[in-house]
Length: 192
Ligand SMILES: Cc1cc2nc3c(=O)[nH]c(=O)nc-3n(C[C@H](O)[C@H](O)[C@H](O)COP(=O)(O)O)c2cc1C
Image 1 (spheres, rainbow, N blue to C red):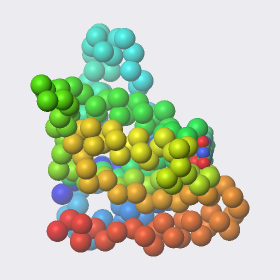
Image 2 (spheres, helix red, strand yellow; image 1 turned 45 degrees about the horizontal axis):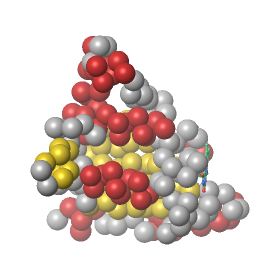
Image 3 (cartoon, helix red, strand yellow; image 1 turned 90 degrees about the vertical axis):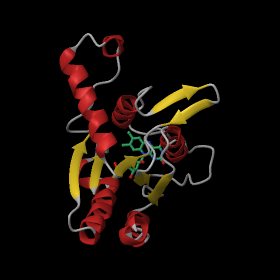
Image 4 (tube, rainbow, N blue to C red; image 1 turned 30 degrees about the vertical axis):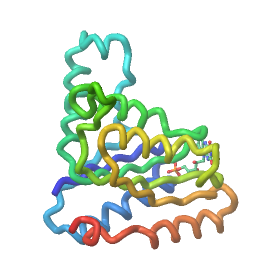
């Protein structure tokens, strides 16, 4: 089984979502001994933003990197993504990654009956961090966006491990992280 671990926080060692995504991956490593884990840190190693040249394929080096990102995504059975809320949405580094995995003819296509996702069968676990409280609120363009875009690609098995309200107080942050870790679902139950 192949697990792809992605982080997108710009807060380094002080990151809530890096802490949570690492905890999720550790649970999977404990539960699945032969698990193959690949890691991409989108802050330290960002994917280039799409430009006119990217779409035209004029830069061979960039095209090769984009193909590698898509291949790594397609090869993964499980994807764990650390995602902070930034300005009510996702970090632009993660959006740049999504722009490389949402590829017509590879991960989705349009048919006479509408769009069809081609990347189904994967499980995605999103380690989400938010300074405020947004669950179910109109301010949440982070988690619903991820649910929608992954669903568009055919991925419907999406779980959220969430610490929110982390900016309210240090105590609230500590409690939110502990509760999020305690709520991590059993990998074996889900993988069976
Ligand atoms: C640039 C930036 C923008 C942020 N925007 C929001 C926001 O719109 N809403 C919110 O509730 N928290 C916001 N926050 C707080 C983060 O979502 C929160 O600190 C979260 O834990 C970040 O995850 P991280 O610790 O893994 O980086 C923002 C933080 C940063 C650094």
